[in-house]
Image (tube, rainbow, N blue to C red; front, side, top):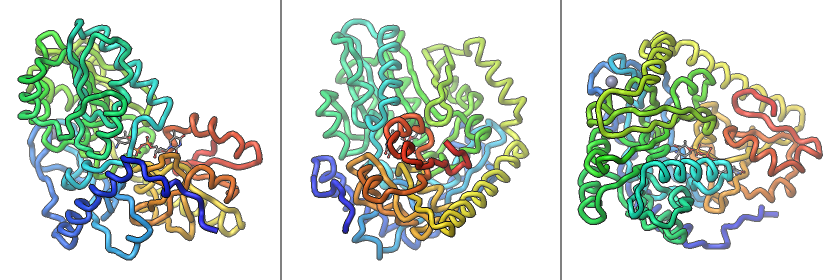
Length: 441
Ligand code: JHZ
Ligand code: ZN
């Protein structure tokens, strides 16, 4: 019997995602067969030095969120090199190739609202920062506003909000939350236009988006142009030290061009007349830093301590990454063996969560539908589609009942607590959760 999916229900955002995917197919066709050097970037995107050194190659991979329809499985997929490099001058870890952003971000299938924990996290960020920096009638602009979750959480009614996000399918969702959104990439010209029409922004928020941007100087020039004199920029990025310490190699994918530490952030801020005021860290997404910056020069005292710890860890040296690379390889061997053993024992295994990370793990580890037949995800817009490259179909959570797997592999390990709470019945009947990083939950 075919698995029930919500594909029969065509939500407006799904219809739009379909339409925008027509553009994707065109771009993908154009990129097929191109020399990978066409996508290569040889200079550091923060300090512009050349001579980036390679840390890790995950091979040729399809873009992690380029989900496929079952009818598209016969077609060739575009693949791009996925290589992590280090700038030994400023310490920025970055990808050596840039997939055209039109391909990655015009139709987006990740929605902030899916995780209750993230909704609360961004709710407190927005309300704390608005209370602190935004006067009555002031303006809050969010870069990468996704489905409007964060901006719509602001409780104060005396502030104006504006989202900027290139994903055309998501604008429908933010509009339904009452968040006006410009469906474009944030650039310096756009920032100047926003300022001309709406005035300066007292608060600019950018969470999990700076890593997606190739031309960071243009973005920061835009921020500097738009920010009110006494305004603040608050941004969040996954923290490089956590990525290395916990070997979160599956957060390396084409959308993520930069992997930030504080040191390169300071270079970038000072070049654009911004002063680092505060750094905080949070456990979300495997380890995140929140940086608050204002107009000015220099940095708050604790920035030096952050940079010192990074220097002590040798983060700007190639040798600091040797252990990481060895662990990535051993985790691949472990996962392949574990899934093969489970199959031999006659245990059924499904994946839980179809984040971008799932595509990275499954493709890098070479896990096809023989070892993992399908994955479950609560996002209606992902259900009925398949993981790029390894092609597991994405099923709704009701498949837990119809398939009754023995083991769930959890690529969405960053949402472990929330998912374990939601699926307590699975564990109550003896089901096991394992992560691609070798943890039993
Ligand atoms: P999740 C995202 O990466 C997107 P991804 C982005 N590229 C980024 O920069 C990083 O975050 C930081 C599902 N799920 O958040 C929903 C359930 O099924 O790890 C999602 O498809 N049930 C902007 O793609 C996936 O898991 C649940 O109960 O790696 C999680 O994706 C919950 C909580 C989630 O994002
Ligand atoms: Zn650099």
